Length: 496
Image (tube, rainbow, N blue to C red; front, side, top):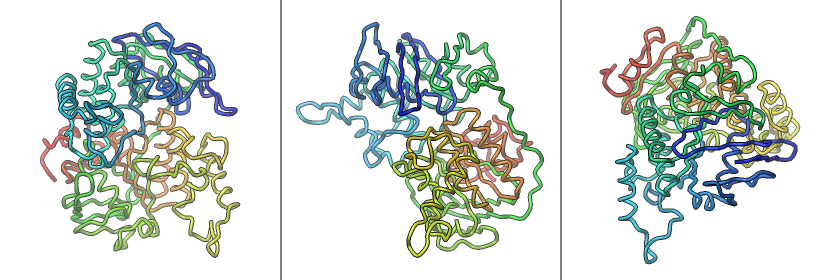
């Protein structure tokens, strides 16, 4: 990519960016949320057209007007927010857009290709499984398989490890190294700087749409040095400090669920006290989604009980648990968190749109809605043109800040946050952690569901580990380690 520039109105997303990848090379692409990484990759994959600059593949200029052109040029991309048809099976998603034989889908050929990918790279999926039944981690695996299925020679990976457990990350890295050894070029976008150091051959750092620096030997460069290149200033992690937990504000007693497009809960008992952070660890797909949905009123259990602030939950609706004092940061901020086609201001008040603050006699109060959004934009440093911008136009970090602002503005007694820093840069993740710790100091009970063990160890006072729908162990943070948590996550640590 030579001299790539792209503007959206007055915002310069990319400015005169040069980027090159060689066959067999794993290139790290670093930068804060909103630095222009995803825009640059969307230009390479044909989602956007550059205002200036050119793209060359194997030394020859190419015109990439859409994703079909990119795939034809051998470029595949695994997006941070997946592009899958949830009602179709794994196999049907792989065959979308591929001509069949004699007007029929080539299922036999597709199965053979899928077997080759599984054998060569260790990426396994049931071809007949509906995508809606896959965990987030499995959906990401499908996105990678989809690119390889189309025989990509350059693979773009946007935050590929955000949903993986440590053992899965090792498996992915083995697969990526095998791909590079076979001559594939790989662009690896990640905010996990230790992973970048371990995997990549070179790095390019973007800041405010421009190349701010390059790292020639990532393994010999510290994560702190990389973070300073990304942010332009020193990053100091927040201090957790001691916890003084009080009364129980959230309790689940022997809660079990039925089928829910994933692993059901099996007699889960958990207590969270005011002024503490309880982390939920586990390999993706072990019941964390069902736990978060039960707590947030999205799923009614088949058996067991749940109390919030001493009051029994009866109907298990979002409105009921919200009225009892629960705040929710959902796992998928683009689908269930915010309405991306609406103005940001509307999304920020939507769960409370019927309250007196934002409506009267069935009519909205536009002035109050915009004023609330403006106050939160300022308080949480949400970087956007204003409250009426389309929510989907914000970067991942700013979307997460908007969700935090919305929930924290109403002083919850309990907060459940699922994958709260997935896809966020080190500065944005630090901001989220600071807000959680401030909320903890205000005596809120917080549940953090995360597959990032380093995050859980840094934030949590206690960590509960889930395996096959059960809580198999609860550790005080002082007694927890990545290896001990990993044993429990694999089912090797017994049960509790």
